[in-house]
Image (cartoon, rainbow, N blue to C red):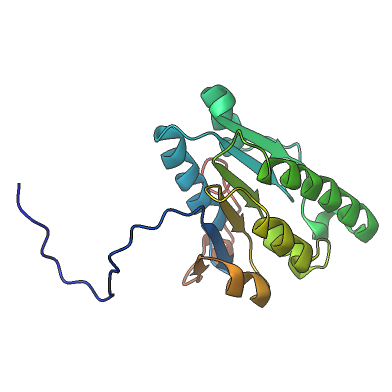
Length: 189
């Protein structure tokens, strides 16, 4: 065994802090949910139980939802939306569905069963004022200390960015949609 002597650009304190992280994937690029699902796969492989609440994706069949059925109670998906707002065109219904999904999130944030909870596409719901960012932060502050939470979606509010432990902004450089290529099952959903 050799010792890792790679240079590091940050200071490491002598402490070894364990903390449930609040992580945010935002931006206009593809991969926000996909990266969070990759973390879910890693977490399940490490013995965690994971829950995913999908705020916008509805009851339509997705690859991630179908894959979750293979993991039994280790990876639970709760698709609670009715599709994208530009499809429903019903603000009141969107707010109602977001409130239902948020109630499910509160339940999962405070349970003792799941070590990782993914709030998929909640950032959009905060951006469009379906869910109050102050309420989200209030509940995140009350979660068990070692519970990890991932919040995905474009337009993450600055207050959430300031609160989170880890924030990644996905930037679109090139996308097949701009070439007239539609979303493809197994890649985008």
